Every structure is written in structure tokens, then in C-alpha cells.
Image (tube, rainbow, N blue to C red; front, side):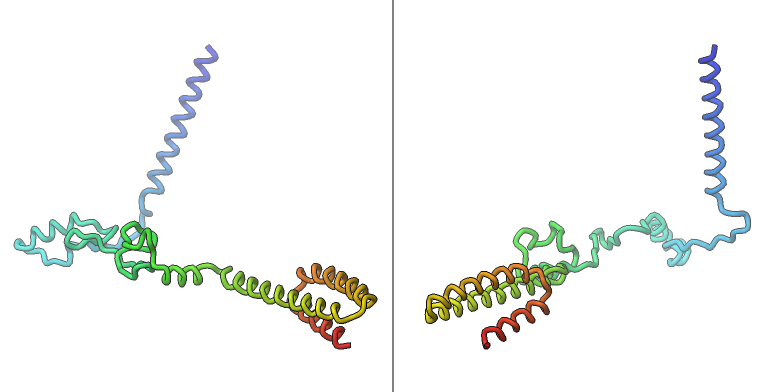
Amino acid sequence: IQSEGLREGRIIASSIKIQELKHFDTFYGQAPPGLIQEEKENPEDCIPDRPENKSAREFLSKAPTKGLWMPLGKEVKVMKCWRCKAYGHRTGDKECPMFLSGNSASEQFRFVHEDPMHEFLKESKEDEKQERIRQLQALLEESTDSDSSTSSSSSNSQTETKKRRHKHTHSKHKSKKKQKRHHKSKKKQKKK
């Protein structure tokens, strides 16, 4: 008996919810009472309403208003491909004749302009190369200096190079200005 009462209660509650939802749907679906609607322009309105234009007006009344414009049944896309420089498709479309091969010069240009990190990475690689060249030049100078000096001075220079190497490993993490100052101070020490 209780289960039947629960079922009836649920059915009544669900029917009330359905009625409320229908009310909201009809209320929000209708325009407010004082609204003056603008007349919609139909495509067939551009052709005068005469008996000889009846077929053209009928054709235009059934024509789609949204979507791609297809004159003469051919799809028209107003977009340009970066790879082949032709209109009618985009860069990644399979319609492109260069879909698989690509235009290498155009791709390189596009890659540079689309990748914000490209310039930064290029500069950092160049800086690393320059720093490596400086290191190798310093090692070369030290080796030529140590060959010409006596054994006591060579032991001192070895300890200095160890200190310099230790300093250099820590200076990699510093900013460029600090590296330049550090490099200038090394030059001053060498001159003394």
C-alpha cells in the first residue's frame, strides 16, 4: 500500500514539473506583448512580383540563407592557402596540392612567424656558441701560458683554473650583464 502511494506521489510530482517546464517554454518562447517585430527580408523580395518572375521567386524562396555560397553548384571559399598561395582552401586542407610535400620556403617563413619562442631559442643558441668559444680561447691561453712558466707557477695556475672553472659553472645561471662584468674582471686580472 505504501509503495503504491509513493508511486502515485512521484507521478504527480513529475507531472507538476512537466507542467512548469511547459509554462517556462511557452513563456520564454513567445515574444513580449508590446514588441513590434521588424519585417524579415526574404531573398525573393528583390525580384518584382510578376507572373513571368514566378519561377525565379519560387526558386529564391527555397534557397538557403546560411552556409556556403554556391553559385552554379560550385562551392566558393574565400580563403588563401599559405603553402601553395592559391585561393579556395586553407593550409591544412587535403585539397592543397602541397598537402604532403609542402613549400619549404613558405613553411619556414610561417614557422618563424607563428612560433614566439623561435627568436629567443635562436639567440640563446648563439650566446651558448659564443660562450663556448670564449671558454676554449681561455683554455688555450692558459695552456700556452702554463707551458712557458715554471713548475711552481704552473701549480698556482692550475689552482686558479680550477677556481675559474668553479666560478664559471655558477656564472652560467647568472644574467648576461653579470657574465659580461665577470668576463671583464677576468681580463683585468690577466693584465695585472
